[in-house]
Length: 361
Image 1 (cartoon, rainbow, N blue to C red):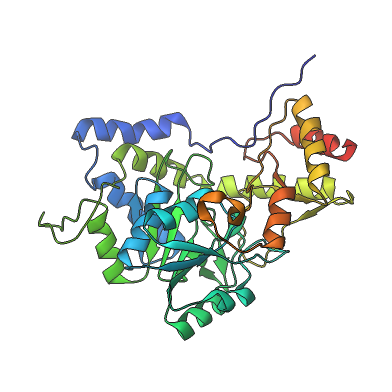
Image 2: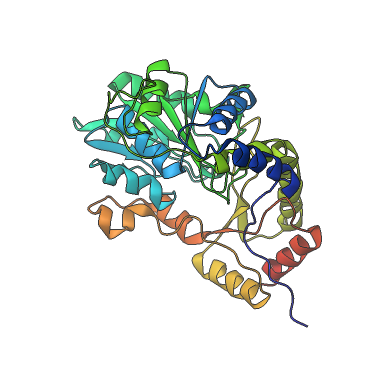
C-alpha cells in the first residue's frame, strides 16, 4: 500500500471558529484595509508579545525589506549573505543597490562577521544579515563593525520570531528588522510581514511609506507604495498569535525527536545555535556531500516524502548577481543542505519513517 504523502511544511492555524469571530467583526464594520482596527490591534499585541517598541505590519516580508531599505536611505553596496532565500538579495538589487556577498560560518550558516570588513568599500552603506532558520547572527560584532564604518544595519528576520539573545528580543538589534508572516512561517497571517524598530522616526516613516506616503492627516509627505496589511490577514494573525507558544513547543519536541533519531547517522550534522529561544521553525540537516543528499532525497520521494533544498544555490553563483567572489563555505553548505518536514501537527510516527529512509540512504 502506498504511504500517505508528507510535505515539508503545513501552516499552523488557529481553530477555524476562533478566526471566524474576527471575520464576523470585519463583516460588521465593513473595514477591510487602510490600517484598520484589526491591524492596529495586531501591531499592539505583537509589540507586547515580542517585547519591542514598534511593529509596523505590511503586506509581506519582501515589502518589509524594501521599506526598510527605503526608510534608511540606503544606496550603493549592501553587504549580505549568499545563504538565504532569493528575496533577500533580490530586493537589494530591486532598490538599485548592489548586493555584496560575504561567506558564512560553517556551523551557524549565518554571515561570518569576521569576513565583513574586508568587503567594505567607499560605496558600502549597509549590512543586511539574515538570522538563518532563526539562529541569531553575532549581533554584537556586526553592530561594532557597523558603528566603526558608519553603516546602517537591517536584519532579515523572516525566520526569527520569538527568538531572544541575553533575554532581549533579537528583533531589537540593528536599525530595522524585517519579518515575514508567510503561511510557511512559525507565525503566519497567510501573507504578511512587519518592520520592527525601536526608532520612532523610522517607525513613523515606514507607516507613511506603506500607504503611498500619506501621513495621519492624509497629506502626502513622503514617497510611498501600497504595502498595507489587510484586516482579513490581521484577523488571522490575532487568532494564530494565541496559539504561537503551543506551536513552538510542539515544533521543538519534533525537532528534538529528529535529533535523537539521527544523532548516530555519521554523514549528517545539525545547525549550531546559541540562543535562549531558537524557534524550531525548520528542520535543516547538512549532508557530507551533495551525492548523499540526492540519494536521500530520491529515497524520501519514493516514500512520498517531500523535502526542500533551503537554500540552494548559493546566491553568489546566480548569474544576475555577477560578478561575485567564490565563497566556498556557502557553496558547500548550499549544495548539501536539506530541510525535512516539520510542522506542529506532524505525527511522530511520520518522523520515525522519515529518519528510517535517511538511515537507509
